[in-house]
Each structure stands twice: as C-alpha cells, then as structure tokens.
Image (cartoon, rainbow, N blue to C red; front, side, top):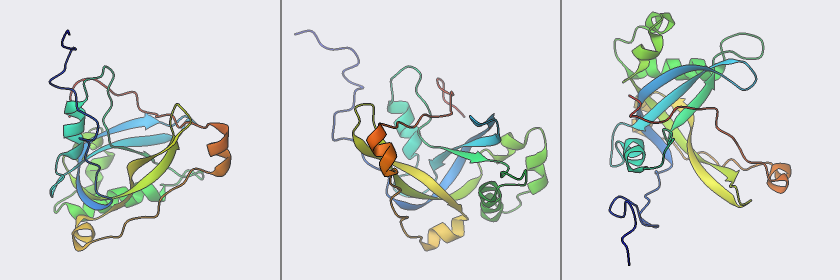
Length: 190
C-alpha cells in the first residue's frame, strides 16, 4: 500500500480537545475593520487563550490545519454602531473590558489610524458558550464561541457557563446554514 500524503501531520479523529466552556483570559491577536453584509461598520476581533492549561488553543488549531484557505478559528464579529448610529453596547463592552484589563491603556489611541494595531496583544476576558448550527449535511452540531466580553479580573474570579444558544426551529427545519463574513486566510495572521 502507498503511504497517503501528509500522514504524519494529519490528526486522527478523537484527538480533538474541546475548549472548556466559561471564562478565559484571552489575548487580542488582531483587529480588522470591516463591513457587515448589511453595510454596517464592524470589527473582526481575533482571539486566543492567553492563560491556563489551554493557552494558545486557537494558535495550535490554526497551525495544525493544513487546508488551503484556512481561517483563524476564533473571530468575534462586533458591530461598531447600533441601528440609531450610536456606539453599540457590544463594542463599548469590548473596549471597556480591554481598558480594565490592561493598566495604562489609552482609549484615545483606539480612534487613531493605527487603533486596530494598538489593540493587538492586549488582554481581555472572554466568556465561551455553545451555539447550535446545521452542517452541510443538515445535521445539528455545536460550535464553541466567545459570546461575551468581561475584564480579566472578573474572569479570574470565575464566571458561569452561558446557556446554550439553539437555532430557531424554523431554521432547523429549513436547512439554514450560517455563513462567515471573514475572508482572511493563509499566513499566520499576527
């Protein structure tokens, strides 16, 4: 029998370690200004685990992924403004959590041309929970995502696991499949 290509670097099923649900101290790896499908300004916040037994969790996944066009495994898509044109509460929560987690953080630097670069490497607390999705075969599966931002002190004290987010019944029946807004791939992103 001929040895298959990339045998040594291919992970066997069952060797995947899921991320522990709940709070993690995270590192902001990259922030990208983008536009949502509906034309609203947003930021794509690339995270990794910064402390604890699962440190560098997403970097390890990214390095182990040998597919072309691979994407960073943990991106939070956050609208910058709400429907009234004011700062969205989610974006404000993200920036306040970063500010509280990084002594000496200068908020005004975020509004400069290099603001996204300024956020790179900063710590922030992330609360991870499960979201249901439907795969290409119509099977219901679970994805672990950062669903809330908190300051790192709150995370270190301990936070609960959020309730599972289920797909609405009509989307489960209709075969709805979520699509990612991110088109980033390729070389190490940071």
